[in-house]
Amino acid sequence: MARTTHHSAAAAVWMLGSIAGFSALAVSGREIGATLDTFEIMLYRSLIGVAVVAAAAVATGRLAEIRARNMGLHLLRNTLHFAGQNLWLYALPLIPLAQLFALEFSSPVMVALAAPFVLHERLTPTRMLSAALGFAGVLIVARPGAAGGAAEGLSAGIVAALLCAVSFAATALVTKRLTERASVLAILFWLALIQSALGLISAGWDGVIALPDRTNLPWVVLLGLSGLAAHLGLTKALSLAPATVVTPLDFLRLPLIALVGMAFYNEPLDPLVFVGGAVIFAANWMNIRAKT
Image (tube, rainbow, N blue to C red):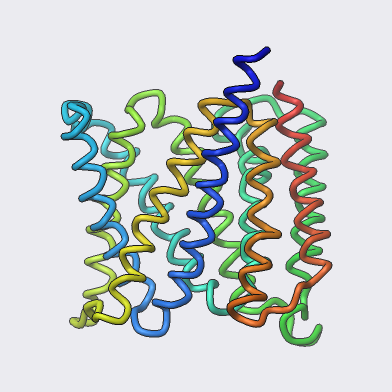
């Protein structure tokens, strides 16, 4: 019992670091967005990732884990993730931070619904109910007219956030297959390297790639490091405690980012975003509990 409590406490500490990382990622992305486009942001973020992951592999003597195997799966996963990240960055300045994070939380619900078709898992009544509940939560958060009147329908930012959640769900499904064949270190390395290449191609398509200046360079570095820290914290927390412990902690991202948006960007606290986010969380929780 004491050991379980210790692991849960350690997981909570890692989750606090993850939440701080995701919040810093959002703020730095907002600050950079005025001077760099999403492809340029992804290019520099990915290059920082390559340097950090390669240095970690050398420092820990695990360089041999990085091999050019399963490249088809790596390319598919990272193309999907690259699309999702660009959609997330595109939506970042267009809708409130809390709304973006709430819609992002719908990704596990989409995974639960798609897993029976992609991973040949059983489509249980609980999974179907959780998917329906998650969809209801999405409708509450992304209600037409929430950002500009019912006649306008869904805004570009909301559509991008929803497509981002779909991309992240598809990424998770491919990742599940990939983790059976490659180590986490190898997955992270190829993630950063392939997305660096995709970022370079996309950013340089028009023949112009803007370089970070002295003003936004610190934000670019923070973006790269905070993204790695956020995912490292989440991964470590899941390795120390069950998802039933980690998921409620991860949901704290929503009220925290709402406060960040209010404090730094004068974004109002929308009660319906919290209601919809809670419904999405309940759907995720139902699906996780059904597996334990």
